[in-house]
Length: 128
Image (cartoon, rainbow, N blue to C red; front, side, top):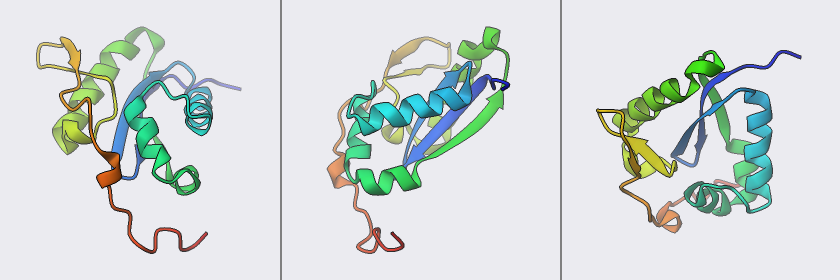
């Protein structure tokens, strides 16, 4: 089985996480496993998942943003984090860190947020 190396975006309930992987399919399984076991390294993403785990498992999406070699993963992840922040804003990015225009890593300016303020529609369980 061929491994796909690249940068991906995980989307859940209006929040996003951008990451890199040398094996995209394996990384997806790792994310799902740690979220289900309440052990994800991003406490922000875990809080979003915990809003409704039954719905989350059926609505979480993983998108491969760019396929690239393992040698440039760090650089391309940085590019896609910056681009995603520009597109949707840092307040809905669940990554611990972001990058500035000079490629310096810094802590997400929204380290604490209240995912319980995220209001799911009353019918969000329909279709189950």
